[in-house]
Image 1 (tube, helix red, strand yellow):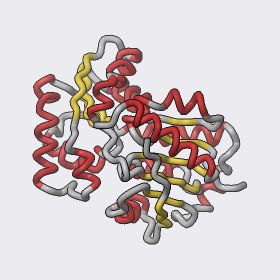
Image 2 (image 1 turned 60 degrees about the vertical axis):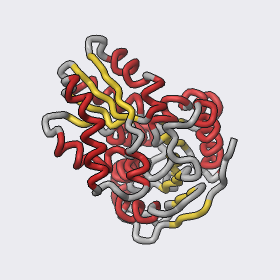
Image 3 (image 1 turned 180 degrees about the horizontal axis):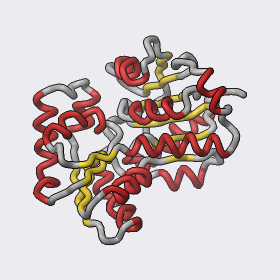
Image 4 (image 1 turned 90 degrees about the horizontal axis):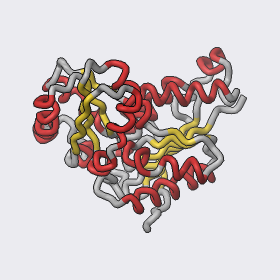
Amino acid sequence: MNAPKIGIRDSGVGGLTVARRIKEQVPNADLLYFADTAHVPYGEKSVVQIRHYALSISAFLIEQGAQMVVFACNTTSALALEAARARFEVPVFGVIEPGARGAAQVSRGKVGVLATAATVASGVYSREIRQLWPDLQTLEVACPAFVPLVEAQQTESLQAFEACQNYLQPLLDFGADTVVLGCTHYPLLLAHLQQIAPHIQFIDPADALARQVAAHLAATSAQSTKNEVNSTKNQGARDTFWVSGARDGVEDWVQTLLDNPNPHLEIGPVFDL
């Protein structure tokens, strides 16, 4: 059976943390990954801009053969997921619901969310968490410095550590026992966050999202049997990566996160509004 083609889109390299988890769940998948580096970061963009980028890139990935599209970006999941599901016939997955569910399942009462300004302004995480567990208290904190630090490959810098301290402090004061990493770039800063707050349970929505994708493929028979999947790992040979702007750092992150020594990286279209 042909390997499933999974389209994944993000503003930059953060979505590679989702791609890594999907590859673990569906090793034989061909990934079609689009990093919209021409417009990163999304957190300060308008709702109209974010929806335009999300829908345009999704259409591009579907034209390239994607059988589903994964919004590996919390900002677009918050602001453009339903519009994409209404427009396209292929399944479209987002990261908000898996993250909210993961937090609601483990929290003892107070959930913090670290996210972009746009995601925080939408209030989507608080709504989703309270729908699942109305008694939970939530606090969302915008982290505008995180994405630029990750995109610049400065995750190990003192500046990154200090940013983690600054953004975690309101959640520590709040008494959060669980914190959702509400942007797919943020798992790349997890070591700092855990060092600062070892008592907090950090939730990476990518894990649950990848399981959803794998379950959908299995249910629709688009995936091979388990034995076939495990015996046909392609090690990224058929994965394709597009960038709409700067490619600096993208290739390095692909090599590191996906164990792909020679990624097929192309310059993609720029969907300006």
